[in-house]
Image (cartoon, rainbow over all chains, first blue to last red; front, side, top):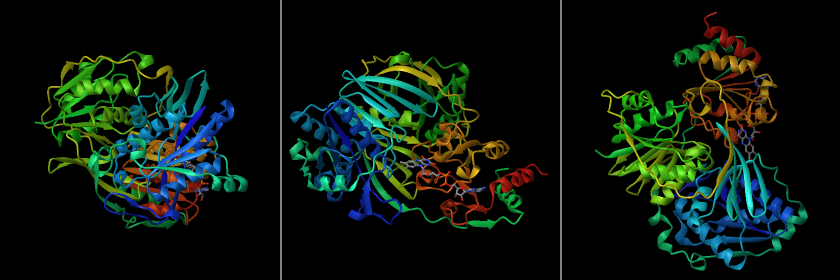
Length: 261
Length: 314
Ligand SMILES: Cc1cc2nc3c(=O)[nH]c(=O)nc-3n(C[C@H](O)[C@H](O)[C@H](O)COP(=O)(O)OP(=O)(O)OC[C@H]3O[C@@H](n4cnc5c(N)ncnc54)[C@H](O)[C@@H]3O)c2cc1C
């Protein structure tokens, strides 16, 4: 089978970064593959280990985004595709879904794609909208937030645990499956895998290569526009006390002053 | 006046508190109309929606259980939305999927996890936080239809000074064959207030060493819900549904009390936008103190009982 895993490059949350007008300025060594995409890569690898086949890692983004597919290859992905084009800048989630869907369709022309796997959310925006949008764009089933996945005779069945409901959902393949971190424990790449990944070439595609009209993506086609982004000011008037026997009393007083008790 | 469609969240026929918040916000944007998917709402439920300003309650009978998926919910929403210029909903994993389909079908711009929404020069402008709530972002929606999912507890629910009619309007929807089939669905009984909607959350981590009783007692005294870190739920100290954070529930209560948890970035991402943050931790260098309004460096086994005693006036 052929499994495509979508991975995203995200800035390192612990380090400094900045927004320019509409996007984040990212420095290559100041970010990596979205942590939760490790679970998606692991899921893709497990699928082909059980059923045979190959994994293609796919990312959309600027030049530094290639780090995301490189990481996926270190973990064991067989092929890597990086869609990069100046016209993509400023895309909203719909534009990104459009580009990913076109890339999957282009991959399909060479070799049938059975499953597209994604992480459950990206640590930067945390919207979780992309997997569903991508499925809608491909007109494929969306099996989202899977904490368990079964593949059997051209069909995928997942279990998902939402805060108020547990569900078991099934759909025929091909399908888009988003996975949570409860599904598996991602493997660590060893030295050999890291060295081997260096040799694999990353295929780079422009919008023209995947047949996307540049007017349909990017800033001008986006349904949303970031007006302003500001780092949240550090917590002011913090009051940290050491408990010397009156900690509970002072906490209770704080809660009362703030009207919580 | 322009219609603001509000997707009503309801449990066992009762309107959820978060929907009353959404209606309150909707009133500041235009004329709210409710979208109710499921069994026909009771007259009490309609009355409640009217008290918060809904002039209409548009009811779409739900598809059957096995096809009750985000894809078909989206079709119901589109059928009921009509000419509304804004679609407002509450940000939950399930609702975001519905809205993703609606946005895809209608081409509307979408913002989720918003803290506010207002008109500005003819466009809906939202505020939200990104990067684990370390950045504030303002976004303008460019399309004629704006889709916004707001976080619970970001608007204070207030009944309308003049109640609206909340006329029940049946809406027909021709559902297509969905791509997915639900084999089973089990409701999870949540004790007390649902975590995401609770105005006060008291959370415990590894520092509880497996005993959540003090955290639960403090939550009860304050009238809040109980949260936890992933370490605590992984250990089986408390059910998975209580996990707060990046891969758990995102909460934005007015008060968040963090007990014996370090404040890892994954956890902070799900609570940092809370109104007031209080932390109790033995380690003065715990990262949770960096975002706390009030912190007590101390042992939760001493600090929590003393806090409860003083709150109860003993
Ligand atoms: C992909 C991924 C996703 C994740 N998602 C989440 C998520 O959604 N939510 C989440 O919570 N975590 C998540 N995690 C885990 C997260 O990284 C941390 O490991 C976890 O939050 C730590 O839990 P903790 O604070 O309970 O434990 P610790 O980090 O061990 O902290 C325990 C704290 O308790 C204090 N303490 C000990 N004894 C006492 C005492 N007697 N009184 C007071 N204080 C005491 C200690 O000083 C310490 O600060 C995720 C991890 C990964 C890799």
